[in-house]
Image (cartoon, rainbow, N blue to C red; front, top):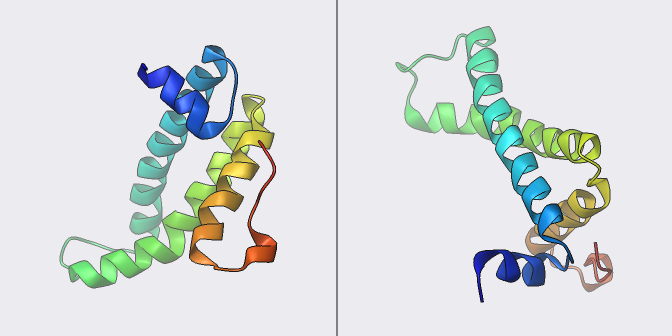
Length: 107
């Protein structure tokens, strides 16, 4: 089984084109998050002199939520809103152990 087949099975999608689009969305979101980190850290005047744990906390508070928003925005632009809303619900469902809120529907 090749990579595309494994991703299609794991993500419960049908076409190779959709896999490619989803991977492009992840790439665009990652690149944007890297540039957003530089911008946000510059605005907040966070430098390398800050202890690593302070930079990590600032990153968690600012960039991590922004990444999720960017994922939905890029997913919508590329026509994959349904998949990425399902993906984020599934991801956050792992951190919140509540059987009623676990997404059981296909993307």
